[in-house]
Length: 248
Image 1 (tube, rainbow, N blue to C red):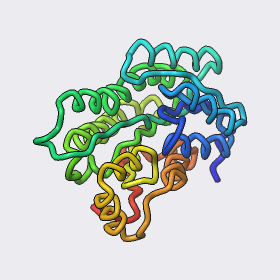
Image 2: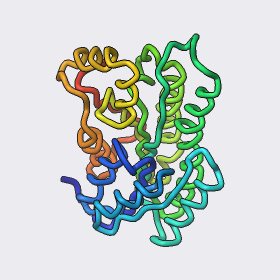
Image 3: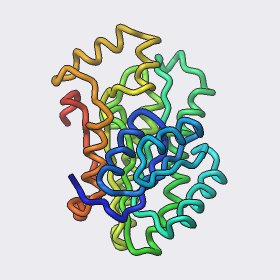
Image 4: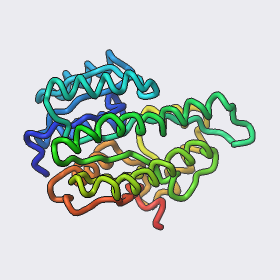
């Protein structure tokens, strides 16, 4: 357990899946969690289930104006934002040569522009208050590549590079920036992939040395550490949470 009492945490894509697991973990450890998600009803239900002062705010991470309005709502209500977790993401699996460029655009806007918008809006708040913690949810696909996920891998590789660069730029302001890279995880997004290609899902599980998909709590534990005071000297790092699927 890490003590996050008094911290305000903004988690994107937190209505379900990994984001919800992260939000639950941070709230359990004392943070006031803001559930930012395009699925407004699901976000409200998640906030109600978490309790502990958690609340929901609707946002489309691909819309710059909505992102800045979301951040202003949080700042106005709490006066600060101590933790930002850029978790919202999307993928469409398939061979690159058969991919639809319209899907490229959606993947890039959600996975790359979304975090960029939130970082541009939140970092000035953290600079003004004298510190903060940022965790960007990337992917092992961005570290080592992943067949059928070319554009997704490109965006997640971009998130890793972005995290390292901002870690350098923000260090003097007392802000740490790190990336967490999940491997295959038991989420609604993975369920969609599995439904389209059951054999792919089975093969992925067999390839993981620990022989199971990651659970949201597995990823949440890594995030909780990186946003805690115990990780105050950890920045610019890329942490794989993949059950041993990748070891480089």
